[in-house]
Length: 131
Image 1 (cartoon, rainbow, N blue to C red):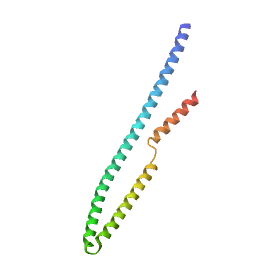
Image 2 (image 1 turned 180 degrees about the horizontal axis):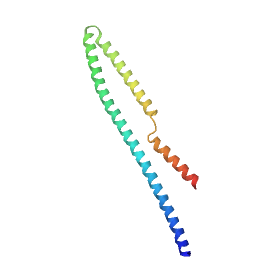
Image 3 (image 1 turned 180 degrees about the vertical axis):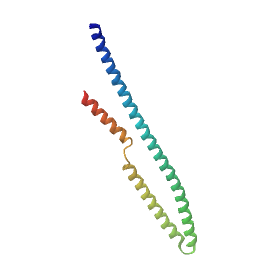
């Protein structure tokens, strides 16, 4: 019976360690899965923004070029220099405003992996409370 008592305690401790390691591994796996999902979402969001931005820049440049040519042709006899000057100032103003808005959007963007970081913080708090 003393053999059973000695062998029972290490087996119980070993089983507890195995359960603890198993729980930690599954917890780590779920956190990694969450991080990979968030990474995929961020990558997709960035790709959509890049494609839309490139298309907007392309068609914006085509529109500005066409408008400039049209206005210069229409006002060639009167004051084509004035039209070009006004259009250049307007173009620079729009470009400066767009750069300002881009900077604002970058500064106000949500923190990447916020959910993963929150879950890891909860996990750390639980582990600290247990020790």
